[in-house]
Image (tube, rainbow, N blue to C red; front, side, top):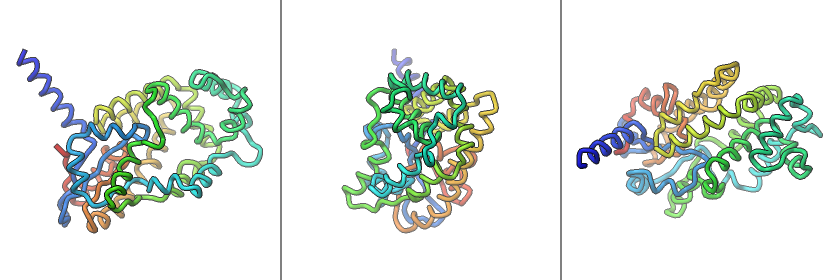
Length: 302
């Protein structure tokens, strides 16, 4: 019996060693260590209680930097900007820009996820007027709710948690990029034609999309950042893979390099906890790799 327990502990330790989401940044002239933690933007704040070593890290840091300042994201001006960016121009609707086959697939998916579809005038008046990229984000959230019921509260997300805790302790809260940058990147920088192409890929491969979401979420719950990356790189086995690679380049690689340009100065000012999506951490173009190339020592928090 003792051997079985010991084996289980060894396996669990090995899993945790390979599956970190919390890392320490030191060296390269830093007087005090900073840290970086990966998040899953749909996971709620209670998950923070399961992360080993996090309490000590939060006490030792003087400021928290997220992708954006979350309170700014929820401000009336930003919400208005976001709402305007989500909508199709003029009187155009999603029915106008999708071919009949994919419009029917969208209706079937909505019926499965929320019990109604765009034949419902109330739903059509809001969702039907959104850009494909905006609807795609809504669908991903709905799929998450379907697979993990009761686990999503937009006001109690894990990204928000770290900034709220910092504010309670009168620490500095900052953002690696502006809310406007994120909104433009997600909704304004991609042509409607490209958004349709990407959205059609999701509708044509919805079962793969669901599997990808589940694998990615389960990997994150196990605190396995590499598993999150592997899920994000999951292949569809068709022309959609090329589109996904372009999206990854824009959503991850470009932003990681942008962040690395400003992170050194932030860490010099005070020991910092950086809070970013887990997909930004590892891989050859991830923040951790870039920090190491810049001369920092980055190691898992034990």
